[in-house]
Length: 414
Image (cartoon, helix red, strand yellow):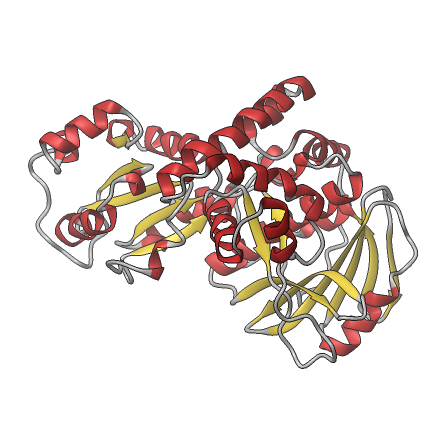
């Protein structure tokens, strides 16, 4: 979580802006923020909207957090950095949270820096309502990767690898490889990962999905048919890795196309699933509409191939977010597929231009011909075939086309 710690909680990077930290439930946002506040000896300025105490204090006095800040606050000085940090966890559940935060920022932003944590809405609210444009930076905290497990060094965007830089020659050590293997089995959510038990993970997973598809969906939206939303979520794992047909889901669920789309959007907003769109290009006969879906908890898959592809999708999303949030470019994760069945699993673009293709394979070390085909057709500068069961593999098969084992690939990925 070095990127979040070093950038979402970096006063020099933020300036006066609020820090919005969004991501799946139970991914560690609260622990991270509380740890930082303890480090700067301001742990008393953490408030969780899910608690009765915080709601009661807010109802009695909307400026309740000022009670724990010294009375002698500095006069407005827009060139100075704020002195205090106030963390508001799950505050997006307040019906007028955007207006309240705008007021907080405009009145107290000269001496208080606000940190807002949430598992939903924070990166969706710009579609409607009061704009907070120019008052915050959004950061996304995702399930752990191997560097998070090993408490890797601080994230430095100036030295971070991005497509276009020279591929590092370093090789992963035994601890890194072990972390990758454990993540594949126990997912990247801290609680089940550090419990280290498949039995615990299965119980945790059932409770996690139940929480998201009942309480979170109900809190977030006006959806009342929770039973069919849960049925929808159970139908999605088998569809991971392929363009999603909403029409086939409407048949299974016996409801309207628009309803299923609304439910899918709700499942994305609560961070159960995420979408990867197709690369919209002039590529002959390319698919331009159907998105692919993946789960933030890749352990939901029993099939090893789907689990590995889903795992890689999450790690690539983490890298794209890191590059974007640190100002290294405007990156996007997509996939490319033609109507005649040619496909490469992932395509990363920067400013809309293809730069990196990635194909996931569980054990096949033979170069996928579609990887070379799409590299030529899209003009991407680099392509990797990432193999799960191929320790020590790193081989160039064509100009800027490599077959590489997953450990080595993740070692240089952000």
